[in-house]
Image (tube, rainbow, N blue to C red):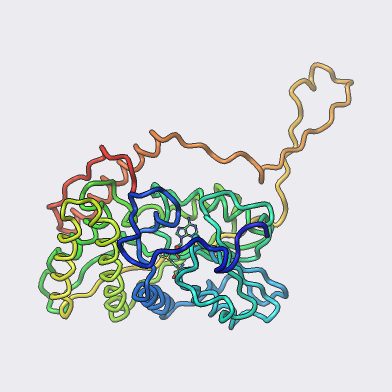
Amino acid sequence: MNFKADEEKMPCVTQTEDELVVSEPATVENRYLLSRGYSSNIRVNTQHYLWKEGLYLLHPSIPINGENLRVAEIGVGTGIWLSEMARILPGSAQLDGFDVSHAQCPPSKFLPSNVSLYIHNCLEDPPSDLLEQYDIIHIQMFNSVVENNDPEPVVRNMVKMLKPGGYISWSEFDFATWKTISSTGDKPSDSLDRLLWYNATAGNTKPVNFLATHWPLELPEIYARNNLSEIVTERAPFATDVAAYMLDTFLLAAEELSFNVLDHLGGGQGDVARDLIKQVERERRDITIQLDRLIAVGRRSRRKLILHIYPTAFPVFPRCKIPKKKVNINKAAPRRVSKAAVETRTRKLSRKALKVLKNKGYNKVEEPSLNNKDTI
Ligand SMILES: C[S@@+](CC[C@H](N)C(=O)[O-])C[C@H]1O[C@@H](n2cnc3c(N)ncnc32)[C@H](O)[C@@H]1O
């Protein structure tokens, strides 16, 4: 492969919160909103174990018994999914992890010998060495990474990496099902909803990001548009005790965002978020959350799709032998969307998310200003 592998070739990764300034030069590395220190590693690993509680590591509709399986994970976090998958897959499987940083992973030498890590930005076209290479591609918890609330560019790039007949599995929280519930039977306070909204809109300054409730639900439709079929979806609510543990990981993520994003806005927004976190912490003995997990599996069709197009001149020269023109629609040009269309869509979706929160009884939110066109 002609792209960077292993730690030696990796860019220097910042560990302190101060260095993860999102408003600074827009490299993919520093656009990542969460932290990469040891407490974030614990958050990511805890989320991994809680996520599969009562569920599975990989959707059971995906066959894993073949020989020489090639499995990829996009956005590996700490690499824990790859390590665990390596233990259950046949020894002949090769697992490759793609991420913009491997700072959260153990040293490559200590990973299972059939796991390799590569630096790759999934928002960019995969290099030719990666085209049609994988039987299975796994991606999970990408809501803070997907840009403009549109996962289609990521899906499109993953489909290019799939062998014909290969599978994609994408798992996300369904924030549309988010609800704070109280163990006392009293109406819970709105501090948790306010905290989530405040973080997702960068202190009410930007369109809602990563709390967006629509796009995980659109994955099956996006799969179908991108040559995936045999689509399987699953919705799995967290048990209430598991959800309470998950809540702690959200508070940790909210704290990371308050340092990495809100503090850099300069208006004291980080302090507002941390006050809300303290408030939720005080209520923590009496509340938990309700939340569903969504899993969408799709399969790339086995054969390349070839369309036979007959030139329109045919009826005029019936005796001429005109060759068929083959068009490989797997290589069709990507759909282009104008910036204005993306902004309109984001504005519409922000309003939708606002309505969901208002319906939940939280009505003090202001509609985020769209004057600043940056997205967090
Ligand atoms: C929230 S973590 C999820 C990690 C893992 N999938 C899990 O479920 O534990 C998101 C991961 O995506 C990576 N990431 C961010 N932007 C990316 C990009 N453009 N291409 C590939 N990976 C990216 C981050 O570095 C981080 O490791």
